Image 1 (cartoon, rainbow, N blue to C red):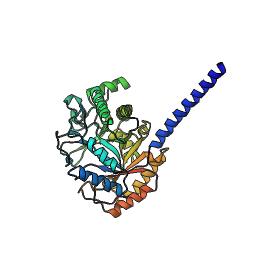
Image 2: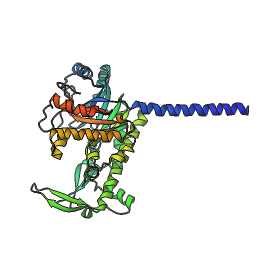
Image 3: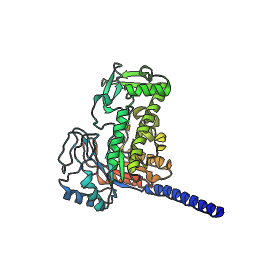
Image 4: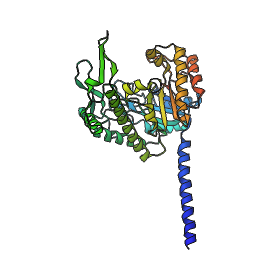
Amino acid sequence: MKALRRCMEGSIFRLTLALFLLSLAGRAGAVELLHAAQVSWLPCRDHAELSREFQDMRRRGFDTVVLRVFHNRGDRVYPFVQPRAEAGVYFATGEAPVVADILTPVIPLARAAGLKVFAWAGTLSTPLGGSDLRNRRYELADGSVVPTDKLDPSHPEVQRRLRALYRDLARYDLDGILLQDDLVLRHTDGFSAAALAAYLRYGGQLPDPEDFYRDRKRGTDGRVRVGRYSPGFDNWARWKSRTLMELATALREEVRQVNPEIRLVINLPYEVLSNPAGSLAWFSLDFAAVQKCGFDYLGLMLYHRQMAKELGLSGDEAISLVGRLVAEGAGSLDRPAQLLIKLQAVDFDDLQPIAPVELEKVGRVVRKHSVSRAWFPYHAPMQFH
């Protein structure tokens, strides 16, 4: 009997180990190479037009549609809905105003066309209501501390309600969720009462903005800029980065508790690779720290025309930089498909579609690497590569 028990115990152990390894392999294999259309708005007036639009996306070679499910005041409303709020979300929840529930009818239409469906959702710009939930920033010009229009990621109520919001979103039959790029803290952000108390518990002292922002200079445009930051600011920026990643990780875990199959994508600015020190200072984002958080995809916004404008580059120089950053990002990951390269399809200044020949140049430098890609914003007349 003892020999039989040992044999059974050994078999159970081997079976358990095999199932565990299989689950790991399944999760590893689940990160597929994506070719996505990221949608900020569609001209479709009804579900029949939506169905045809999704079929057209699939014919163009897309396998994934990323749908905007947040609505800021002033955004264009999807024509196929009757809005019930001026700002809010496009899914059922009790945590934020609901403009309309688009996911219930839209997901089956996209799936019928052969598309995976990702929801593009906001975080710190979500209108939860309540002025006490807003973050606060330090004014370089006069040293005052004023409210911002974004939520405070250090506030326990903000954390609780965003977790509940993402639980509600995860109840839909989604393949993935893309976190909007509002999950940032600018260099003068973060001076709320909740953040100050948390930083005091963390480091044993309050943040000192008079020390942080050195060599301030007022430009000809009237704006005050910082010449250099103090070593204390670096500690403050890293703590803010940690705060953002703790919130992002909490949202990821809430989603996975509801549906472990949903893939999470975090949006990141190009500076996380091109200028890591600047990214940490300006956005409180660090690429190495993000990599440790266990997201399925890292969305890197390599918008070539935006980069050209901001960095003073020619069009070809910006496209070359896209290629270098793709190579660097892909080389830092075990599975390059985890890197979702966000590519620009419309000029953000004049809102005109970018010519196909230019899109092909961009697509060519990205396709050299086995990375996922998403064109933004998707618009039907164009041919994407």
